[in-house]
Image (cartoon, rainbow, N blue to C red; front, side, top):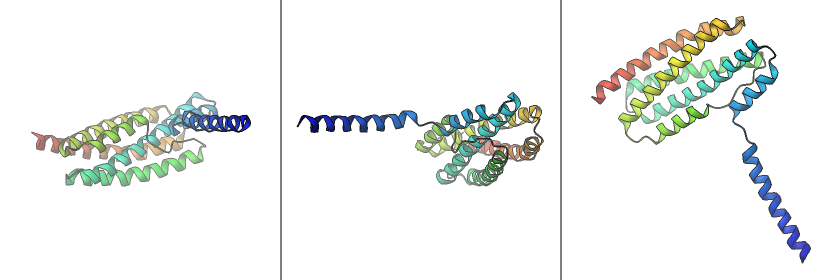
Length: 193
C-alpha cells in the first residue's frame, strides 16, 4: 500500500514538474532568433544586419495582422483599401526577406514582437469603430515612420550589397504606404470632429 501511494505521489510530482517546466522554458521566436544570430555572426556588422532582418520580419508579421484586422473591423472604405494594399505588399516583402534570410543563414522569428501583439489585442477589443480607425491609423503611421528610419539607417551602415539593394527597392513602397496611411489618418480626424 505504501508503494502505491509513493508511486502515485511521484507520478503526480513528475507530471506537475513537466507541465510547469514546459511553460517556463518556451521562448518567444523573436528571442530565439536574436540568440541564434548572436551565436552565428562573428562580426558586429553581420550581427547588426541579422538583427535588422529579424526585426523587419517581426514588424511585417505585425503589420500584416494589423491590416487584416482593419479589413475585418473598419467601416471606412479608404482604410479597408489601404489595409488590403499593405497586407498584400507586406506579405510579398515578408516572403522576399525570409528568402534573403535563408540565403544568409539568418534566423528569423515566426511572429510579431510582443509590443505589436499587445497593440493588435487592444485594437481587437476596441468596440468603438471611430476609436478603432483613429488608433489603427496612429499605430500604422508610427510603425511605418520607425520602419523607414530603421531602413535608412541600415542602408547607410550595411556593407552587404544584397541587403542594401533590398532596402533600396523596399523603401519607396514603405514611403508610399506611409503617405496613404497619413491620408487615411487625416480623413479619420475630419470625420471625428
